[in-house]
Image (cartoon, rainbow, N blue to C red; front, side):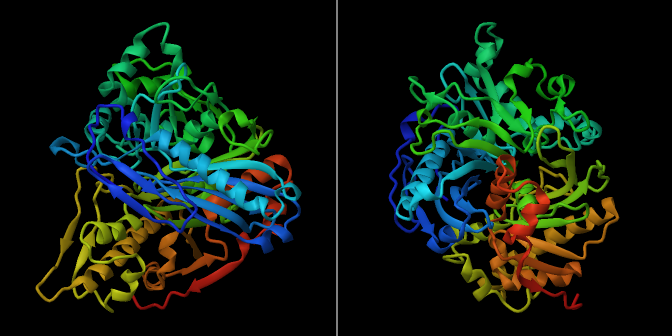
Length: 557
């Protein structure tokens, strides 16, 4: 991912220069002036399209490092996809260590480009015969955007979920007790939640604060996570204001994303003004500045070409999930006690706890897993989240230059770590310790260690973090998993998956279709529009229940 310096207190309209082409993914960067060119990775499978039941479901998968659009068949197979990376903004300066931002306008433009590329690709295989029935969205959670609904212009860059600038704010709110809001929210007070980013934006963005305090402008202030921002763009029309794209879209989020703010009462499933006041004090944030809360699966709106996307007139936007809830849904983990672990940029182990809110006393998050329809039951989950998984390997590649690509990690890794251990607390420690002041360390290094040992230690670090969360979920739920369903890029490392199975003592199972996050959004949208009548029919007809590979625990550890 590209990074470089940027004035954190200026709008970066002048830095948005993009070049897109239909070539294998590549990226070139001019870090000094932030001129960046990303190319796009595009693929399609005509056989999947031919075998589909004359319908496709679109899935927008907006992640930390890239945006993807996938066309999913009614069998749960990928017919076509396009992916673009976006700029990673790391403001420099002694006081900006740990800051991480995204340009929300770039994210939207990349979304449009990916959708248009897939549609163009499918036209060669007769798109009219296989129309999109609906579009679902899954997104990086907690990453927070503030914008003006009158102009459509963001007040500031999106503050990314792993950004640590709000550590001091979280300490002030916690006032010595990080669990003071857990009874209502299910969450500890930490730098991880979207609400503390709202507080930082109010403290540091003069224009935002001025608008919020102006009785005439107050009603135009909007806060949202990336799902809300994308839906606003998808359902809006062209803005005439500089630095904006669309304006006038609907302002909503779903229950899974809403549960990650520190603002939501988990039982009532509604924003709590008292919580908002505690987190944002001394600022006054009205409920009009927060999105309406919807279920994960329902028709929210229908698209028109006025949003800037051709060929999508009247296609319903019909599902929204936070990315880890989407992966749980995409793994068809619909029964209480079923769980999945995603090895992505971060690491996220989530267990379905059914209709029961399971309170954690071991540093986990109690969250909403999904809701099918506004009249559907709220399904809850327990989650352990770790900030650095795949990004640890990215650190080996980009910062230490130990590897040139991720696959080298397994090739170079030694058979044993020979006493070298890595703790990748680059953004502090998340679950189950919640120490934003922690920093990474390498332990046990000697002159005999080489890059192979670092590769081994990095892979082991990811697995050890999973074990700590795995043990915490058992301690809270008293449910012993019979197997761990896994997905994400990290599952391509057989060495790490075998080590994982060995240290947690259960088999590790990888599904046949790995894009479980995108699948989850597509499955939800398909249920909303009747492609599948319910989760039972979905599970019966798609590929999500079929395993590709299993690593048996060996009893070695």
